[in-house]
Each structure stands twice: as structure tokens, then as C-alpha cells.
Image 1: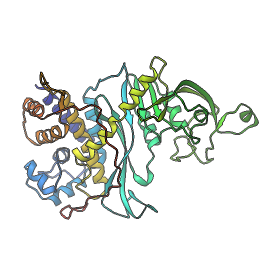
Image 2 (image 1 turned 180 degrees about the horizontal axis):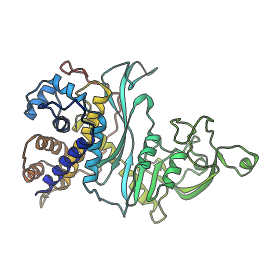
Image 3 (image 1 turned 45 degrees about the vertical axis):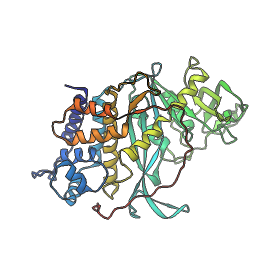
Image 4 (image 1 turned 90 degrees about the horizontal axis):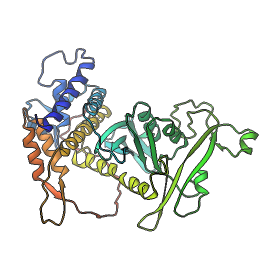
Length: 429
């Protein structure tokens, strides 16, 4: 059996196991061309365009309305179970000096406008309001797969809380480094990371007057030092004399509270110590990170590791544009969650298949070549839609569409607010 067929078999098992654990009830008791298995595979293998186009490509002779009715009978938790099962079924063991590198960040997925939905967000910047879900995943940088994810309505987004939830439900069986950008520099989160066995962190932090108090004291130059302090939630005379850092935790706040400010899940006082590394970027600006990595990782190592975090940004780009997550095929929050999980599964499937592809390098070429991920996704989805497809043929086809690797290419980021692209041929959900 080819490696691609083995990956496909792992996905089959993930789907079958998820369906077996869900409550069948009466919804799928009647025989139909649209079983749970068919719907799940349809969404994982779906490309852009209308539902009618997708059904035609899959060779399923039913109406788009029938698909929407069937989808409404499947809880997004079933798709979540498929995602988790597929993660467990395959080994992803790419390491950096013994560490698995997991980046964390957040992105938004736009939905059709619906003011009554939990995803509806409205403020002065968007007076008419939009519907969005906030996706916060853990991304395996070297394995190039999404390892975990939390999906929240945009009005209730909490990236720090999402990462804490993923830490609490994960048992890292090998050394793991969590890499995060600014916005995750929370005392509470750092305490969770320090307490988590087998886990280290590297978090970009603010370096202005609004930074952590001990960080703001450091001179604006390259530094690599250890800082220590004590967190307290009280303000006794002894606390003040010892210069403890006071966190103003609301009286009604409990451990694990959703309150974004002043959240603290540990005893008080709580001593804390970690490294602060500040290095100079090529553009002449300084960058500051907090980390628990040992001193065997030099300042240059830290710089390389933080640069690797950019992998999650390219992952988001591929998830939205290569996988087509910017164009959903349903209007409800539940349908959007189904498609988010389906896209994450398809992304992981394509990434795992790409790792098995042998790309022949030209003997006298200027550039090395790599897999064209966009073409690989298209071919993998076609493979998933085709009964008894040949895995070896899939690997050969992907290898044909190699692209050159052009190092050190940079382009200024052009950030624009993007709304939902509506289409009249979509079925209401």
C-alpha cells in the first residue's frame, strides 16, 4: 500500500470512528444517498463554487437543498471528532533540537450577515455589523499541520483563554515549544506554560512603557537575561514592601474565568522566573521575547525560532485561499464550524501527502524545487472524491507541479478588512 493510501486509510478510520461515537437518533435512520459519511467526505473534498457544482464533481445526484437539510442534522462536534481522530492516527515527528514547534495565533472567518446570530459583532468601526467566527489554532510549524483549534464567536473571542484550554486538554509526550506573537504576553498564560510538563514557550512581548514592569526597566539594546518577580492578588503592606507585582483580579472572578482582564488561576503570592531576549532585526528595530528555553539556546537560536513562527501566517493564507475557506457554502454558525473543521482536515491531509512526494531536483538549476501546495490541495481533493483512487498516481501527479524556492523574498503586508462574499445560488441554512 502506498503512503498516500495509508494516509487515506487513516482518514477513513477517523471518519468511521467519529460517526460510530455520535448519537444516530432518527435523523439518519432512513436510507439515503446522503449519509453522514457522504456529507463529511463531501465537505472535506469540496472546492470553491456552488453546491450544485460540488455535487456534480462528486458524482452525487441530489439537490443542494437536500445537502443543507442533511448538514443540519450533523453536529459540528462530529467534524471536530474527525479532526481529532485524524491527528491521532498519523505520526508527526519533525523536531527542532528535540522540540516540537507549535505556533499559536488567531484569525477570523467571515459569515453572511445575521444580526440574531452569536457571531454578530457591531461597533463604531463597523456600525452595520458583520458576522465572524474567531479561529485560534496550534500549528505544527515543521510538520505543517494544524494540531488543535478553538473556534469562538468573534464578540466573545479570547485567544489567551483558547490557548489555556488547548494546554489543559493536551498531554505533550515530547518536548514542545509554544511560539506566540504579541497579544499573548499574559502573566496568567505564562504561569500555565511554566506549570505545564514537557512544555516551553517563546512569546513576543511589548517593549514600551506599556510592557511588563520588569521588561520596561531593561535598556533598549540587545540583552539576554533572566528576570524574576512575584505575582500577588493582594495589596498588603508586606506585598508593597517586597515590591510584588499586583494583579487586580475582580472579586467575582474564579479560576478559569472568562474575564479577559485580571485573570489569575494560581495561588498568591506566586514567584515567577524566565528569560528575556532582545535582538536587533535586519530593519534596525529591536524585538523582545520572553522564553523559558535554557541558555543552551543562544540569542541567534531564539531569533531563528521566532522567525519560524511566520509558518502559521502562511498556513492561514493557504487555509483561506488555497482551501477556499473565505467562500462558505452555508449561512449558519454551525455550518461555518463544519466547514472550518473540514478545511483543517483537508489541509492536514494534503500536508501529510506532500511530505511523501519526491521532488526531483535539476542538476544544473539555479533554484531548488518544492511541492506546489495549491496544486497539491486540488489533486488531493480530487483523490478524496474519486472511489478507489490510486495513491501512487497522486504522488506522481503532485511531483509534476513543483515550483522553485526563491529565498529572501519579501513583500510589504497589505492588510485590508474583508467581508463575506455572498452568492445568490447558496442555500439558506
